[in-house]
Length: 277
Image (cartoon, rainbow, N blue to C red; front, side, top):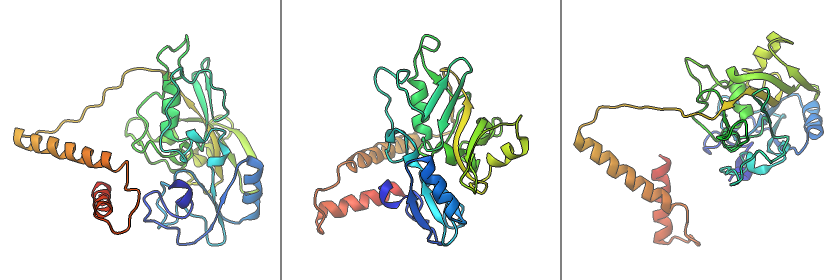
């Protein structure tokens, strides 16, 4: 579960922080400022998707891994929840500092603690007279939707494209907290070009990303095509295997109520390992 492991090990549970830093959860920027200013080494933790063995997602020994989910007003927009589902009436009436849409400027300012999945869902459901079908980011965005926006930007990894670049290339403006615990806003290519470039790929080395401004556009259809030559026999085998995997995965939604060496529990564990692999 997120709250049991985040900050200590990566999301797959197999990459612990060897430096064993302190794990601290904050619920406000003043709290974060106090933590940052008191420690020589800190790292922000969103969804825990950064590999930890090489310490990219870990503070040094004696430092602090800071869980950022509490900075968001709405927990459902963070990695503490597995999936965000927009309300039937859409999100245009929702007022939150976590995601602020500027329809006139066609931008969105989003807190770093918001997951990519939540941001995309929120934008798609932001239906107004200007955009009856909602909004989207200008081009395909990620291969790991559960990652936080802050993590995607600062690591410049997931969702990378040879044509459109990574999440770092999407950023128009960035706010961050420096090593002194000071909140610095309004960093852009025009105001501080070198710092702007560095922050977008810093991996948290220059400070903690607080929020970013991104370009948006009205919702449109995106075509994704994957082609592979298969003979009919191989195609049918893959269809059957996929159907079996889906059946097993659906069964994992309801684990046995009690596991004391019973056969149902053993079968459940076996199926879980099979799906994980």
